[in-house]
Amino acid sequence: MVEKAIRARGEIGWVLFGYLLTFAGTFIGLKVLTISLGPERYGGLALGLAISGVIGTFVYGPINQWVLRFYSIHQERQRFNSFFSMIVLVYTASLLCIVGVTIIGLLVFLPLLSKQWIFLGLVATLFAVVSGFNGLFLSLQSARRNRKVVALYQSAESILKPMFAIIFLYLFGKSDYYALLGFCLASFLVMLFQGMAVSRDVVLSPIFSLQAFQGSSIKQEKKEFMNYVTPFLYFSIFGSIFLYGDRWILQFSMGDKSVGIYAALYQIANAPILVTAGIVSQLIMPVAFGKAGEMKNERQQKDSKMLIRQSVWIMLLIFIAILVIVSYFDDTLVRLLTTEEFVEQSSTLWILVAGLALFNIAQTFSIYGFSSMQTNIYILPKAIQAILFLVLCVYFVEVSGIRGVAISIILSSAVYLVSVIVANKRLRIKYTSI
Image (cartoon, rainbow, N blue to C red):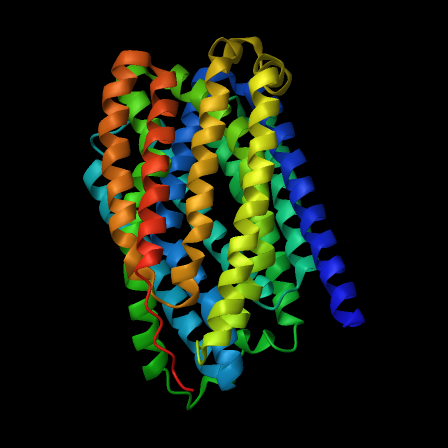
């Protein structure tokens, strides 16, 4: 019991350490890049990151969720060779698909787009691939509950990205695609070091050994992978609309400068929310999935469900505190973390915080379905949220500009939270054995 308590304190400490450094790196990078690029070019960087984010959400997000969830299951089965074989197969296939789509995209869009947009798209795609592999290594380490390793690499990436971006801007010129190229190189270096760390891990190192896969059947893994991941493909479509559609709507309605101002405000609002949700998620998801296992009995379900419920209450209290602070100090925060050009929209900050808080609470509640491997129950809530957000955003941007996007986020997130809670009420657990 004492050993568990010591380990728990150590894990919490490393997770907090990692996210605090990530938090600091995010805001340092925001300040330096908004000064260097200005609102318009920062808007271009935001659009490049949106392209990368869509690829990551659609391709690597579902895969890494499967890795995190099924690690504990394969640990119970003692079938790690099949698990690793499946990972290698899926990542190879996804990489080939991205390369193929990129080549086709170049052939189609090369005559239509400027060189700047072509280069931005290529760098964004490369950044998405590198980030996807980083996500794989982080998911494996998180599943292993190697909190120290995860904390160090997460924080290293958050600090190195703006550092390399500034170096590239200084060497090659103040352009959004050079900043994104700096992000890409920083993530690539972190990926290399993560790969070396995985290769030294006794349990995870066989992922690099092709001999370990010889004779391993992955028929069961393929079926489970498709059943678990298919709903995530729908999530990715709807999630991409919610997470990145706002930038493109603003781009077509108001131009680069508005995108840059909004992206900076969004980053300020999202950083404390994302850090809080990330800490809770990183601490509870491997434990909740570990407790759930293959859902062999009612006790596994109850333990997992109680842990998730407690985590939501903790998140809610922290989010309320963040909202109060942001409401009182919105001008000061925006001025401190960006430049004077961004301050005119600072009154939008608290609305963004409230909307993103509601969204992340709903995401945490959805761990219920993920742990019981019933991910498909969240397709309808995601669809409702995405369509509602799109309709509201198009309307409110015309009426209220940047503030209209924030209003759309809070309204659609509230509906999403209610939809997830309703979906959870319909969960029916079928235990694999008694």
